[in-house]
Length: 169
Image 1 (tube, rainbow, N blue to C red):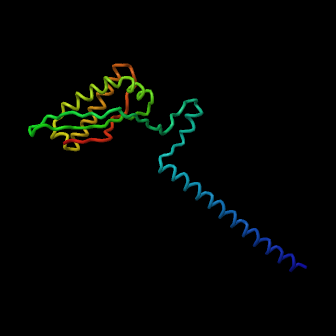
Image 2 (image 1 turned 90 degrees about the horizontal axis):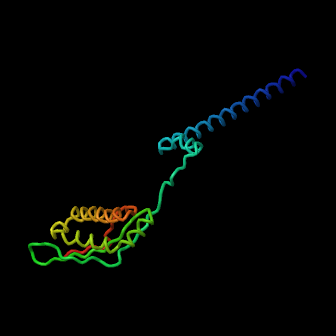
């Protein structure tokens, strides 16, 4: 009978040892998963402060606002200055903004915007319009010209001018 009790005690010790081993492995696995998630969030730029701003009552803007587009009705066709004779440029223009009210204002003031852009386009040199830098500069100047008109009218600014078709000959 004493031998029987000793066998049961030995089996109970083995079971307790296996149970401790299983619990230890589960805790170790949970710790590894937690550290992996925290490391991933840290590398991706996540911060633990984002929850505190919402708790303080501060509103957060959405991460991405979609752009809205509006094309000007007719293409611009202008003659360019060139020492090689008569040269022409045809440009189809669209406006981009994340604020729909800016595009609505641009549509309202389209005659003034078209006049400004036509003057700007007509003052370009043919050789400059043959290079990517020249076209990029014209895009920048076009955006500034449109925003100047909108500013004078008290309207919000657009994000940029786009050339949807650009031909120089």
